[in-house]
Image 1: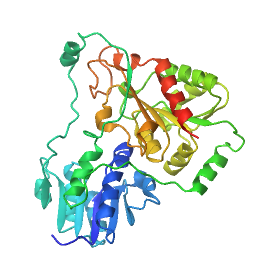
Image 2 (image 1 turned 135 degrees about the vertical axis):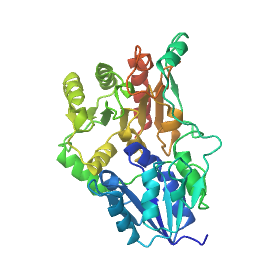
Image 3 (image 1 turned 90 degrees about the vertical axis):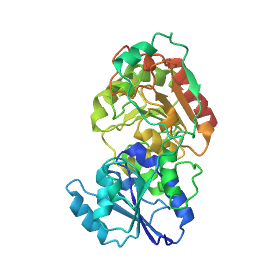
Image 4 (image 1 turned 180 degrees about the vertical axis):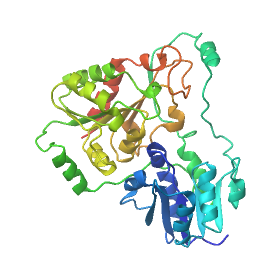
Length: 367
């Protein structure tokens, strides 16, 4: 295959997954510094990539566009190579219909015909598998042990899957931190819009929601108790983050914290979310998209894992000491279920004082 000159990357569809592709994009730019590198991404995620140095072009997939309209738009780009990050048949069909000569993606049922190179899974790849209730009941015969902090482990991280695909084009497969970029003027605008100009104490962030389901959410009242104790030990102004679906829980937490709190749930665009996160000295969150965004922006993160696996989806900070992962030793975790079918022990096993200690530790590391 000739050296690519115009590369299309078909991006992922979810915020956290998108952030975990940034190491692969950076490795592609490193390998092909003179190539035109374009990213095909759902319109809702397009703002994430503004100012990103790995990319020359961002092509949004509009909600109203069918697969044929998307392919027609891609044909106009005259791409010679396509790298397909998602594993869906549609994503492979898009680049096939766009008549891109070289099409690389993972080998999966119902789509290999559309690829010119179907890449076998990494030998050490780990997949997410939902546990059945009988399996969970068997596992929980072991007693719950004390919760603990764990550091990140790159070996099974989802970012490795995207790096492995980039390596099919000759890029370096070694891991990199995730990186996103926000301009100083965007940060200043966020400070003004959300009336934070007069805040003279450190700003801390909370994201109590999680799109996947309640099994990923530490209880709201524990977030309140942790926020109050953290503020007792270190004066701070709390920002509460979340989407429109998180407004009820965010309102509850804002009322519980009481004073010196700003509830931004449902009020930020994606770029405003990024700018407001950059205002935070630390960020406390469940396993969710904004967790990945904060870490990629260099914000210290304390994150709580229950039904999901930090080995697979931990954030990717530049400085490993700026990340604290909290999880219990519940034997049924991770189950990858949206709702807990038993007693929610994976989250209930994470104590308030452990979260407080992790957050204060990160705050003391930050300037």
